[in-house]
Length: 71
Image 1 (cartoon, rainbow, N blue to C red):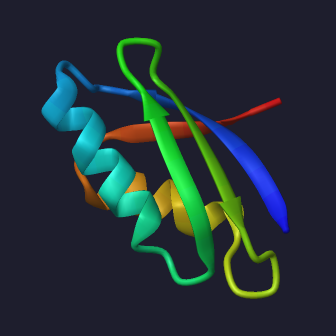
Image 2 (cartoon, helix red, strand yellow; image 1 turned 45 degrees about the vertical axis):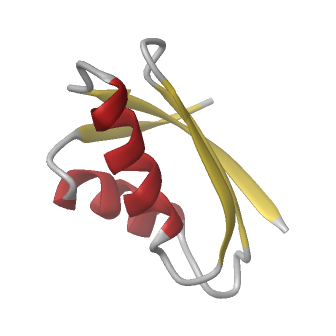
């Protein structure tokens, strides 16, 4: 199992947080995802053989927000 942290920009409310969390959980190979609002940090646990960090960045973008990898 692999994990990553993302800095998510553009969230303004709890609904935004849920939208980003749902987008991250929708990536195949995801075991779990949690998003903190208003801190703008997301943490994802996933199967590195089935998903990549780039897929999570794309999922956040498709939901209407921007994200960068942390650390």
